[in-house]
Image (cartoon, rainbow, N blue to C red; front, side, top):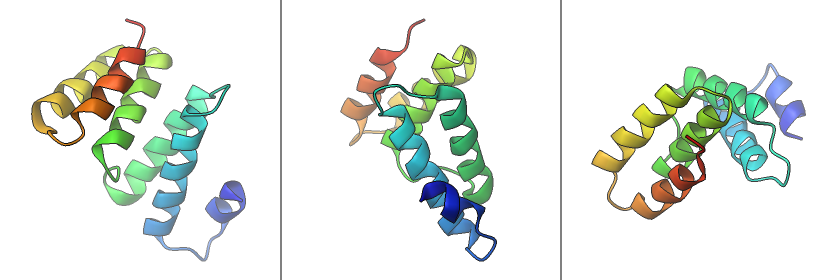
Length: 101
């Protein structure tokens, strides 16, 4: 369903971004995550909408970056999130703890 909706030319950019973001998050949380695909989808969502919807989702993107070897970018995102996000601190710390540095 995500792939079909994502390929549709009739949808809005915000809908496409939300679809990519949700699909990427589901991939990361699956039993056998495809991190390169998740990163591509997160980055498509970011390019379509200018960002991700919340700090928890951004933390899962940072985790995905770490898992594909982009640790510097991942670390920078986690540092930014931990310095600014108060309500989502637990979610952010969880995702960061999964990273293998």
